[in-house]
Image (cartoon, rainbow, N blue to C red; front, top):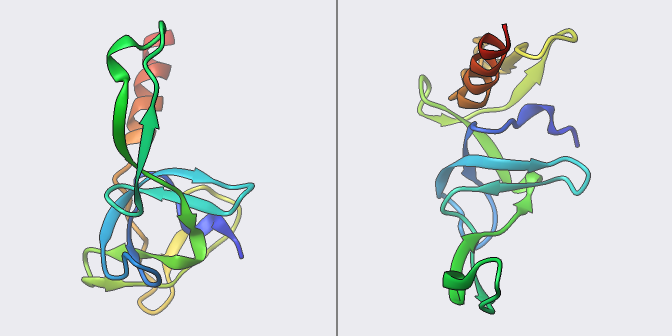
Length: 122
């Protein structure tokens, strides 16, 4: 399965598992393990020991854990449903909705940050 259909900051919906039907934003894509971390989905409790590097972080902490990428589908706001996506060519922004043929839009915050860093270097 290709992970080219899912990118960071994409809106996705969970289609299988205990969180089925929940929507969220992709926080991280773990390409080697074929997993994604989705905001508000698969919340686990970590018991953290206080340490000198982070003295106030002792105790229990809830955070999202990775889920398999095959359990999520991209969400299209324009169609208000989960959609299948295919890629065209070799470009980065060539993801299209399979049924409608329209371009899949992303939140694009990561891309905006990268552009801001480039402007700062110039």
